[in-house]
Amino acid sequence: MKKLLTGALSLTFVFSIFSTSVSAADSFPDLDQASWAKEEILYLHEEGIINGLPDGTFGPKENVTRAQVAVMLVRDLYPNETAENEPPFSDLSKSAYYYDAIAVAYEKGIMKGDGDNMRPQDPISRAEAVVMVDRAYDIERDGEVSGFPDANDISWATESILDLSSQHIINGTPGGTFEPFQNITRASFAKVLAATIEPSFRNDAAGLSNSQIANKVDTLQSKVHTTLYNDLKEYGVDKEDRDYQRIEEEIAQYATKDFSDEVEGAYYDACLSCDTLYYFNTFAWDIQTNVSENNSEKIIVETVQPETFGYLGSFETITLMKQNGNWKLDSIDQTLFDAERHLNLTVEQAKQRIVDELGERDVTYVNTYEKRVQDWEGNEYDTTIHVFKNNKDDSKIKVDASTGGIPL
Image (cartoon, rainbow, N blue to C red; front, side, top):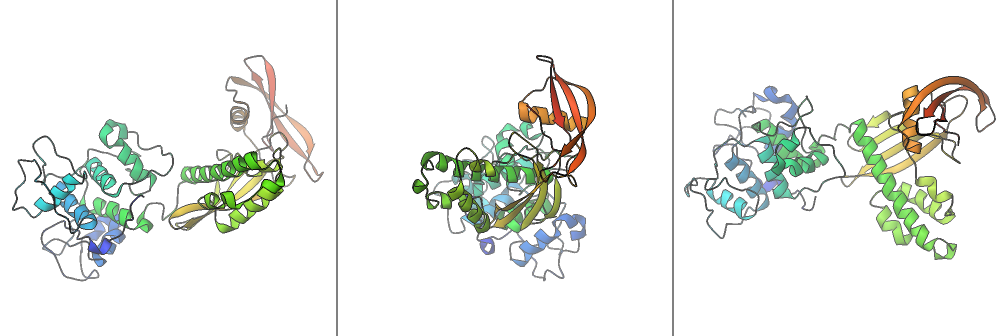
């Protein structure tokens, strides 16, 4: 994020103009109605951010109004500011508790009206809430995200939905949609606000999905390789021209100190025609993704790198570490395929290898046969060869099911 999400103690989380003074242990007997947001609600309450309703409940299923959201955001980000001009809305009363907050929110560009009206006491939709949070905290998008199938139904909110989704601040519905027009409840907005203020509440704290892990690894590995290779390409013809300090700071954005040290070793040992490709792995997540650890601080995942020209293929155990809120590569450990452990590609997976490696999609499966081969240590074993016809020229394409290799 461009702006530090601090100041939680300065935020008065006003769902009501009334407050309760009971302790967290004794308060909100109705939180079982929203157990999925209980920790976030209690966190905000203990920080002095949330006050409950006059009857001592929280009302997690009740709607939040546009005015209440404006009050929360302004008291967090602009607690001592007043608007220089009066907002141009006919439905705002200067005596309302939320008038000053809405005036500041409008002036800061956080909140916009609907013609002559601001509709302060209307329930706020999920899309409106996401847009206001995005404007207020200036959320930066973290890589490419697929979003939700119904996000494009509301074009003025699509970018904000993608921004917050990429930072794991918001979730979709169990059905995989976002439901942008649905009103957001007190519990749901508490979850969004807690995740915005305190990153440990973001929905990757319990682990990333397999696709998110694959995206993180591929992005980080690509950035490390590109940084390394570009410098070697420009300065690495003569070893005397190499200076890792030139790229060390940039590498540090994507790699832990341990992995950076490994990159430095490769940097000084590299030859442009071979060793620089050491960090240019093509991981086949669709063939294998075995996650052994996945939490808010560390991810360990095994995938494979199929055999290519000049490369035997291997299992790759990749470790990511969270440092200062950012995922970084910590290690990539390689185990070459051998007679004891190798792949067993299906016909469909072999066909996908042809797409990935050769870019050929118009192929037809022909047959499969067995072949005796040797691994890198000279041990023999039986492998399966899947044969396809390239419909462009009727040539045959063979895929080794054990290694994913495609003989030229």
